[in-house]
Length: 333
Image 1 (cartoon, rainbow, N blue to C red):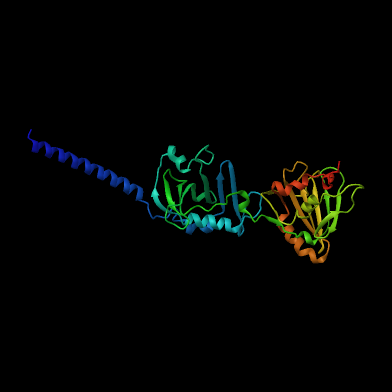
Image 2: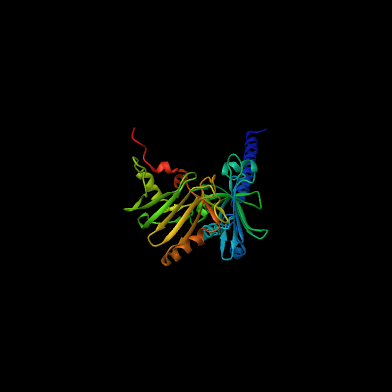
């Protein structure tokens, strides 16, 4: 065979291979970008009014919030922050597909799109529902700050298909359970306190009286001095009291737990009582008015706290584990 013939056959083969590769690359690129620019949930805007509950699964924890009139409440019946729901729904409605990604389950962990209970690469599962119908649902995975949007991008996959996507925008979710709620329970300035009573889990109750901008022991055993640091902690128990979790808690608190009852100069009386002797930081809160001027404040506290128990941080719950002896300074040896 002549040299020219061999060269011609070689060139023809190269052209054929290049053409085949070109078609393959073109098809692949077209598949990746086929949905680019499309809203992930195009029908969400028309279904907003029908959403009646939201289910978020993070690991083994499931948070379900349900519509109650014009608001949403969690499983305990406690109201959820309107902004938490509004931010979540708005973020889902504005997700725009940048690229189509893998549809192979074995690769989901690379994008943090595996099942929420997976040991590695777990996603957060989000579902907006109207009755039994899913209005919008997805698995939210890794974020990607390189995607061109104000909030960057995120890897997601819809609940109704195996394909995953890199989208412009991110899913706006509360990071902790407490972030679903307005968590401030009390904000009573220690300077306004007139008196208080601390009832430990065991032993006699301890009466406290106003002293300067705080509290002091009404009586001190002979030869002993008060622990002013702990008394100051008690005076500030209700100054900025927030909760980490909430559950239903009907009726009075079970007996056996510690309690702190404070009275302000304006006549507001507030009781913070452990939800039983093994409360694990759970408390009940109630209020009453000793003077007519305190009715509005008492009603506001009861409207927020009645029918619920609240889990405090370990720092805020620590004083409830004290004994009367702990309010006294240790004797000098």
